[in-house]
Image (cartoon, rainbow, N blue to C red; front, side, top):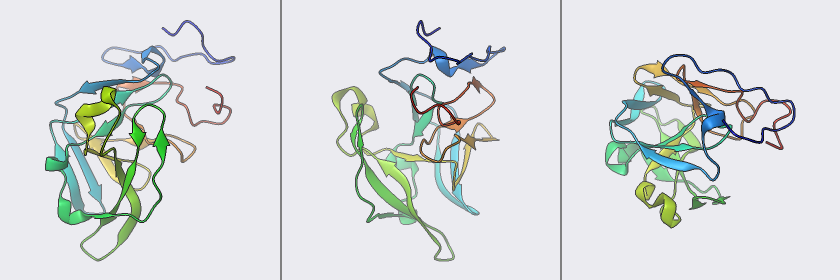
Length: 171
């Protein structure tokens, strides 16, 4: 358990097979996974993988990174969205997602093409948010973090409270 919790935060107790996001480290850790991830834009499969990585950071549900080899390149195009900077991973590149019907989700995914050394295993891998896409983890549809800024996947195997809820800005 984190020794210094933000004022007023009471972590949920994890049950059998669950993890508390309050036990995740800061700075964040990177962990390889063989769980089955599927990302859909409408009915179109954008990515399907058993070789993803997850980023684990205090107060956040995991953010998942899928190797480029497991992403359907025909569904991606480089976005005109400006790059952003993560203090841990480096400079992000954004990708638009293209559907069968020509629909486009602008900046629907992102990658770190040249991440910091600690995150080198996710170079070129793509991450997707369950806000606008259907993101599945071992068949369970992930719920997005509240607040619209973060992109963690909330599933039944993680408990919070999660950063992004009202009053969590300083966490």
